[in-house]
Image (tube, rainbow, N blue to C red; front, side, top):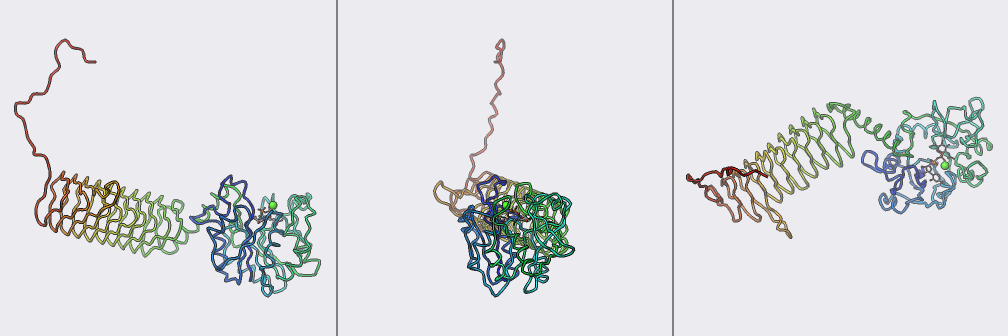
Length: 456
Ligand code: UD1
Ligand code: CA
């Protein structure tokens, strides 16, 4: 089959510089949702009709399996499909989708394809309590005879509640013939794709209709409000699927997945967590409330405590991260590591059983096993021009409020005294401390206020 995706409309009501079909839904452009669904049907060709912001759309989404047809100016949905006729394979039917109707499902389209047969025109229709704005499906008895647009309809037609979703499948040779005969003699001076219905009927070609599994599948995005409505629909569906797969969600209405989230067995996720990109959670992982996790891999049994932020990091099994931890790209934590509150890590490899429990910055570092990093420890990795590495070997103990001025190495089993500013390597097994000597002055008296003087 050929699939034509209409995406030339400008989406004025979005009030945005971004072309409408590039607005993200569940972390992915609207048009990318339609493309995923289209590809799942394994069509022989996919042709996208683009216009407003077309170059930007093409630059972002182009792929070897796509063909692009420019529609300039935009003279209606029929005119849009006309721009694709030279690209259509006549030996197979043509399915028309909308680039701004992102949630259409493979199941519904397969049903539409199955009712279309080889020589008939099949429409996807829905029944609406308020059909205002849509093209109405006019029937003679059971037989569909034409579609009338809202602006061309009289009161009797406007009372019809069965409407055109715009999605249809047609035999290609006939479609080209019907398109060639379209006129713009209507209220909007547009070439309506919907006029192919009366053309088919006039030729004695059967016109059938089927309905989607859910009304939401046919909802389009014309405004930010509709985008938000569809975002909720998409998130509810993702949450339902996660629960079906055995994930415990504290509240399925308070999770946002903007990409792919794969979970092992007995994963549990508290409220208000956001997952972006590709996230992999192992068995028995628990995610506390308000975590933002992006492109991360988290090992079995690991606990993320509330308000943890992870981007581009991998964490082993049985680790404990947070609350309020921030793991930035290139962080690799091994099994049984602990990273506590207000600890930031970037490009840091931390081996098994090591801990940084409070208030630290560990960047461009390699940390061995069983290392204890005290509160207030900072790797001074940046000299204003270049980044340098800090190496901390197994079993080292880094006292609180220590600065490690990289490049620097702390030997195996070394202890750094609290407050040390380490500028040279610390030898293994020894105590290294850099600190002004403490003194006490026994004769010192605290100043007192002189009599008769007012304090200002
Ligand atoms: C169209 C249908 C109407 C249906 C409604 C469903 C026609 C004449 N009318 O209405 O029966 O109920 O969809 O939403 O087909 N587009 C182009 N080029 C154009 C015009 C539109 O690519 O010149 C694209 C738009 O980007 C959009 C889609 O076609 O993705 C539908 O256009 P829109 O203007 O929203 O639909 P209507 O004409 O209002
Ligand atoms: Ca229109």
